[in-house]
Image (cartoon, rainbow, N blue to C red; front, side):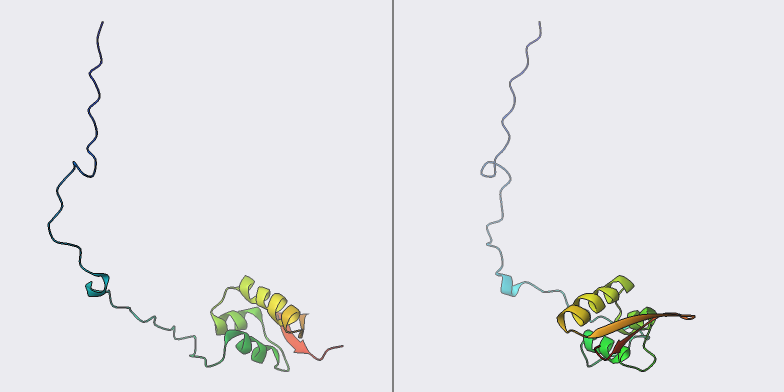
Length: 114
């Protein structure tokens, strides 16, 4: 019959490796990594208006605009643009945004309230 040897106790933090005698440096003295500015893509102009206002400007044109044009202008994905049209422009701001199906695709525009 074999007997199991007793389990060795695990070292605790106090009985483990010795730490250096120097206290840790204060957070303010630690070197911070330099922040790299995000480069803007060549196809996105630097806009001074908020993105929802950019969408409103595109939608107010007489011919309206497409989802592709709005995604290009804002840098958002198509589902985000449609969500902003539905949630912010229609529901919160009360704008009458319509979608017309044309040969070139769907065109969105703001019309006068009925």
